[in-house]
Image 1 (cartoon, rainbow, N blue to C red):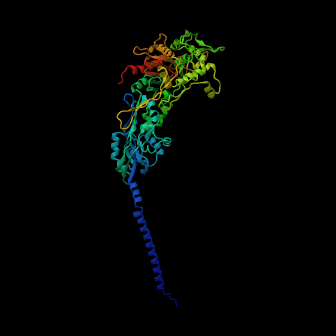
Image 2: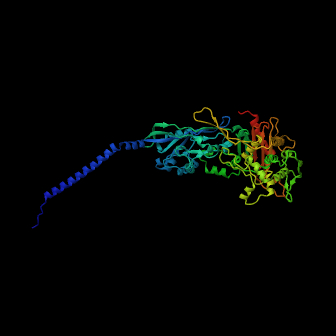
Image 3: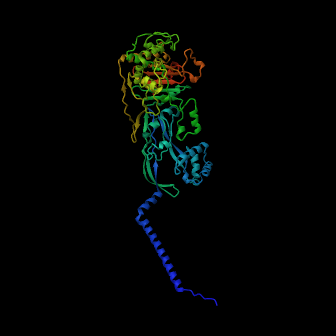
Length: 614
């Protein structure tokens, strides 16, 4: 008979009650924890979480300042800011970037160049940064996108001011240009002040005066929705615009200087001898700095870099050339000031010069020689033999010491970046650089501005200005005044202290300047073709060898390639009685200073001295 099992209802009832009490306790405990958390959120940490909530709704955005403008001495604008619309993408807010770009290209033209720039900038920026994919949109393109705006989350059109250079080609090397801030620049700039700013000065005045031109960033608090779009502005602190710069440069004179070269390459620098103000600083060829503002394409940059004419090379500041015969007035003055020669003493020029007990002949440019010749005629006719002998008598130490006074071999410290200092050789320099002794023959060729001797057009113009003022040496400068924010008139910058060179006799300086006037006014002057009745010019022609002609060879300009021909040089100042302008011109591979470089200087001086500014 099967066994019957009876249920223990009392035990099951107690077990149920125990579980129910446990479950209820757990629920009460959890509810207690929940209540405590609610108290913590709503009461104890209310302020903290309210702030976090507000931060999700309110964003702080930088307001980039407007970059300062640049004017010439007559108020002609050289660098300005033009309004432009750019199509920009914020990668973080775009789900499918490739598909978005493909759809955008159906309503707005996006070139391969645009895409490459976008991808390059994308690697440099953060995902939440807005990156331009097209710049300088046309009005119809802006309208087409506005109609389709709802289709492209994370894409928007932003209005901004882009740097523009109206005289692009003529002023590129002086002004420089702005470009997008790169990673190395991010390491040295004040990132808080550059919040919202994408461009910075790269070269020239734009770089040297970056702090003045940039200004101070502003801030605004805006309310945004869940998509990150701005609903309204809550609070705003306006930015402080950059300061405007006024240059000593004459825009019209700059155009004349660039145009005067024609098809030739070279550099011309015009300076006010009394103040050091740069009136023109031309480097031919130039380039279009506007190409760099929004990022130059690799192909365009390659074309500029690979061009045999080197348009990116600032010849006025960085071109280092032998000064040739343009240095002869300075060496003649050195001879007078050191008592090595007197003004009327004559030397015989047979067409060559030989050191004692040496067979090597140092040739004069005139094969038949100049015959008996004094210092005045030696400058006027550019007699090499006279200056071979004078340099030999003085010796390298005196020669180096005197030329150094005029700034040869040193930077002028002009307020533009990138200047080189040329080379004024000495015994110490050769021992250090070449690890060998100085030879007498090297002193001879230095006496006619050849050999190791190198100078820049700016340096040569500055030295000529010092000669024009009879020893008043001014530091060259380009920026003459700055217009502060809120000011109606620019404030002229204080003049840099001038240096007065030591004099043995004022007559020595007068004699050399008289010799230079005969270069233009004398019957046998090497630049007599630029003589004008309107004002008197003191000048000196020069020719600098590109390669050395062997002793037994003849230099035939017609038989050698253009790039191997001599450089043509000319220095001058005018009017002689009260110098207002000093000029240095170098024409690369131009040949003869009197026929090629001097007419360029004459055109520059004519413009400045005889024509009223427009």
